[in-house]
Length: 529
Image (cartoon, rainbow, N blue to C red):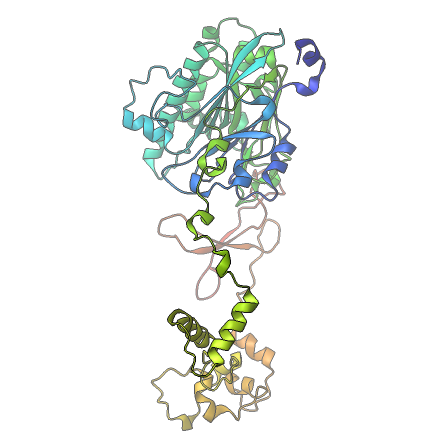
């Protein structure tokens, strides 16, 4: 399309979305419906939780889009990212991982920077969890120039406090990400890094920052401090060196003081209802691109379906599609390209002369079995015998083809049965039918309940037999019934149960949020006093 007509059509301006989807196969609606509703040219998903062997065509091949996946090679149902590009935004090149090690050779995008501080084994390890897909596109800028835009879709590792090695892994991943992004940027063009970075940068990005000094000492935040330029200072300076890093947090560039702008909430505590969350999902871009080509960068908290919400960048530039999808495109995988072997190829082809209908087979089988002096073939004989075994399976002795009453399992064995007290009193009622057949269904509850007059109703019997849990106590903050929870964290209290306020987690100043009521459950009396 000519540059003039494109400039007149604002609908063609580029839009990019990032979303930690928390399981691409667990969506409530079809993936195409989700992608279309996000209304973007490039949609980057994180935590897809799908490995290649579990990837199915309805997820991999979406009409109107071309897709690029990175799968975890260390665990199934873990990590993973995917980038979906509209056909009008088909990339020039695509690559999996940050190091170039996964393809066995340097990928089509290149620009890996100086990675001598990493061993080959470490580089491969940082890409083995399926955390990065890179796509490279052509765009038409507002001054009608064709330029290159590289989009790095990342799902950065989480630092598990109980696993110190994961903290080191996360920081090394950050380091490799920075080396690669800056190398691509210095080679020319523009770079966008977007995804779940798994670190809230500033106190304003956290619902409840405790000790601010300790908050700032977090290694992930220290990395962001040197990687990103200050969005306020960068507007007043010219040189990247004067403003810190080479990249900007696009949301804070347009909304530097907006509070309660979070992208992730704890689902287990219902924290999204009180907006008690963090902002850990970002669209980062080199400063020149943000200043010249970004219209806005927004958060979409109204979009549900995950413990994260999408973030979106609105741009002034226009995407230019490549003629052909890069080789990493999912549609070229053998299982989706029509080159894989089908099940029918492993089956013996039918001989039409020997084909018979199911009705003919039944008639033939009947005639062979009923004819005097005719002996079925060995294969058919085995089949007939097998069917006979299935059809002639005996039920439980004395069951007359039906199952016994559930109440029968709770009938006491009568004294005349000759069973000693040391044996189990819960017998198969059918095996004792000759002793208890005189017991009727109406009288069964009386026998089992142990009442002398035998007038207890069945409902009362079941209530005494199947006692429910005691009613929960009311929390002191709201006077409402509590919920029963179980400690799952390893330690001396692992497995213990306790009562807590049923309301969602929130800030202590929020009266609608959970109060601090807590009560251990006592196994004997129901709850500690």
